[in-house]
Amino acid sequence: MDAKTEHLVQEFMHGLIKRNPGQTEFHQAVYEVAGTVLPFIENKPKYKDLRILERMTEPDRIVIFRVCWEDDEGNIRVNRGYRVQNNNAIGPYKGGLRFHPSVTESVLKFLAFEQTFKNSLTGLPMGGGKGGSDFNPKGKSDREVMRFCQAFMSELFRHIGADTDVPAGDIGVGAREIGYMFGQYKRLANEFKGILTGKGLEFGGSLIRTEATGYGTVYFMENMLQHAGDSMDGKVCCVSGSGNVATYAVEKINHLGGKVVTLSDSSGFIYDEAGIDAEKLQYVIDLKTKRRGRISEYADEFGCKFVADERPWSVPCHLAFPCATQNEINVQDAQLLVKNGCQGVSEGANMPSEQDAIAIFQDAKILFAPSKAANAGGVAVSGLEMSQNSARISWNEVELQDLLQSIMKSIHERCVEYGETDGRVDYLKGANVAGFVKVADAMLAYGVV
Ligand code: NDP
Ligand code: 2IT
Image (cartoon, rainbow, N blue to C red; front, side):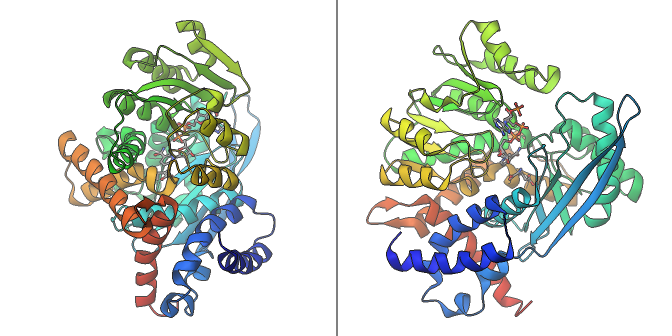
């Protein structure tokens, strides 16, 4: 960042931090955008003077509510539920629900802000939102999860709608939780409408929605490599996480000729030098979605290394796919990755790299795809699920695969259009500016609102 940009960003952040004290994740996400969007709008009065970025960083509204439910022992439990409706300039609010003890207003504001840019990049008509709860599904019985989901939807239902706000899954919210929440919505509203995405195929879900985020993250990497005259073939890859995004990233890397040697969860990581093939991957999917076990069990099953309480970034690799959570790559991790010869990072998780870690990737001139571009495949197929629900039809797998691939390709092209200087692509700048322009132009059309 040059001195002039630094000054612009500091001035902008000063006001934002004052208005949102202590919300460090939200500050971080805005900082990442401000560093590229502020210089872009500096000589464009239509955006600058009309305070478009200031308006985009103030959510349209935030709903916070009590979620009260009963556990299997008859104890009354109280959690907090949220929905952050950030911006609906280009379509209904759209974005996932996260159930994790680390959920706070700050975390959901960062995610809803990011989602606004990401959804814009998909080219589909979706605004940005995010929600969730500090509820921890880990160790809960199916019935407890069901009762929590029903209680959560009993309040959320009055704030969402097929043309208003369409939530989906995220950390801790998968097919099981979406089923319970959709069932409760249907009961309360007496309507069968596409008010959630990621639904089961029997009740309005779309083919390949489950796979879309992981696949899309790998397609984005493939696009970056091709643009640089390279390919996925033979690349050794480190993937973190072992949930929805991570597992389908592994599947696509395998399809494209790469080899994945790590997976992780919040207890540590496994290192399988031989590679995680289709059979081992099926074991992980069953472990995580059916038995809800720990990744260390993989090491026992296949006789490989498990490293407790650490992240996988010390393992030498050509490509890294962080697919667990925010801030899972710090400066030391980034330095290690670069030192060990990593050539590219594609962010499957939302904001997995700390600010200074991104700077290390950029200084080392390795390929770096920010989450709002790299993981947009999930919400893109959610958008396609909404279209199918509105038209009351279902597209087949081939059509949807083609659409996902072409959407990821066009996001890559838009990043190149806005991020390329002197033959080098700054994907962070490209994604931020391209995502900004569409939302900003819609907001300008509405006047001062
Ligand atoms: P899942 O709940 O399916 O899996 C999350 C994985 O990340 C688990 O392996 C989990 O381990 C690990 N994890 C979560 N929190 C932490 C933590 N604090 N420290 C270490 N590991 C952690 O979620 P998803 O795969 O859906 O989401 C992963 C990431 O991808 C998130 O950042 C999400 O926002 C993002 N994303 C998801 C999309 C989707 O369609 N699902 C779309 C776009 C982005 P453990 O089980 O031990 O907690
Ligand atoms: O972060 C994300 O893009 C998601 N969790 C998916 C959102 C969606 O509406 O499918």
